[in-house]
Length: 416
Image (cartoon, rainbow, N blue to C red):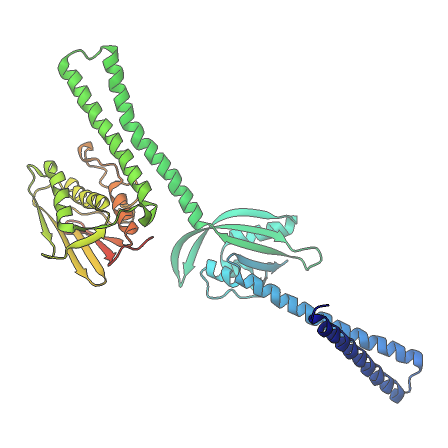
């Protein structure tokens, strides 16, 4: 026997003594009442049984209330939205997650689903589950509204099923927010479609010229040289698309893909200008740099920052063929970090293009000639690089006045 055994025996004996004493107290009280009332022994037994039944019923009600409160408390903590409605579609219970998903301060009980959620899809799904007594699962698009303003489209997975047979008639609904998964899947589909298109176009041209050369249709040397030049041009385009895709893929791993070391930002910008020198020949374009004489140092991956400044400068040069273009690249440092700005006074970016310029394969100004056509991945690489270094990038453009990219970076790279 362990040292706890005597204590356990003592507790059991004490509990038994308490129960026996309680039972005797109830019996004495019942006997006293029956004696005062002048009841016969049989009637006294009936009264005692009813009295005991009332006590037991009260305990059952207390347990039921406790379980109900516990169940509601658990439903309040889950991330999915939960709603229970009666057969008239009036709300009997709604957890906080549902209010958050629907962007409502409160969802009132006693009102119908349609009145509170303002979404006929959810109401019709609940009615179908009740009417046909079966479980339904459906994806829906919901226009989120808050304070009278439209927040945008949200995607929900809604599950509805009738309440158990022992309960009152009604329906329970569980709502999952799948907006992020839906958008990710759409981005994946768009990416595959765009990548296939961008690679197929130059490959088709190259194969066409190969077939022409093999068939012997092109016989003079000048035509052959022209074919080879076009094939080389599109071969390099395919190579650049693949390199850009690999760059984005590495950057999506965040800071783990970076080789961090201090480097001089002015020298990095100058290297990008040297690389773009052939594009600047014969153009009336000026590039100004404004950096501190000292301490213009950034801790980051120089390889990716070379691409950032090359892409931003190349984008400004290609999109502004008119003379008089001025490009300014500046940087300011503080204890909190640094702010880098690349701006130009060119034709600018239309307002309807601004939300999309950092998306993969997106290209504005579709009226431009193929000679200045890019891969549509440059600005996506810029954004990914900045984010991988823990920073943010902002674009503001007033057509004909100024287009400005503002990059804000922390004092030290932050793993993201």
